[in-house]
Image 1 (spheres, rainbow, N blue to C red):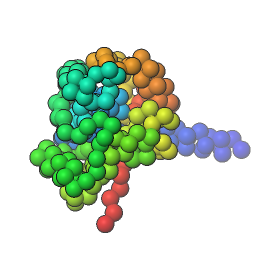
Image 2: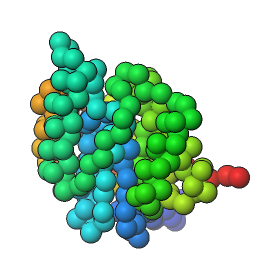
Image 3: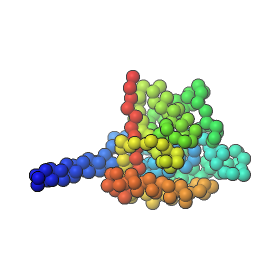
Image 4: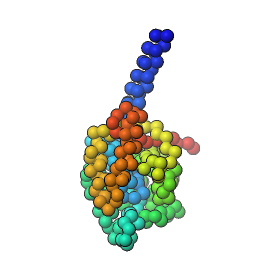
Length: 238
């Protein structure tokens, strides 16, 4: 009986060590990463800590916004909202040390069609990332779903030239049925991540922080850290 307990303890220790390793080492070897979000603040909240960690590792990181947040400020026109929210996103990217790119879709009216497929495919061809992170496709927000599908198609059209991972945003309210395969310990990056997404002053960031802090604490519990971000890897098939 004592032998079984000892073996079980050793097994749990090895499992925990493996989880920690997965949380720390899967990012190694990448040179250029694109994070594609539907709106200003999506990349930052989904994986801002990971973006900061990648920059600290010397990786080039680009934050791509499908829309300009045109519908994101009540009482403002689309043009006014886009100007405000893209400026906020640029400040957030500066805080994380990453580059920003804005595509031409409209917040609340993101489209999937031949031209939109071509737009994102052209961007990825021009940037040539070896890792892309985007929204998990099962999500209550239509724009998030559109963004995910466009990235997935670009990945297939590129003949799987980059690794594709999905992240989560406001899980339970937006992201649904998300099951992580990989984690990143962002305990040391958490404070800088919060500062970055508080650049989005036009949004209700205290409520968003409360939601994401709970997620990051839970994901941290899964991989034995204080704060973590979680991802799931898309496996390619012919």
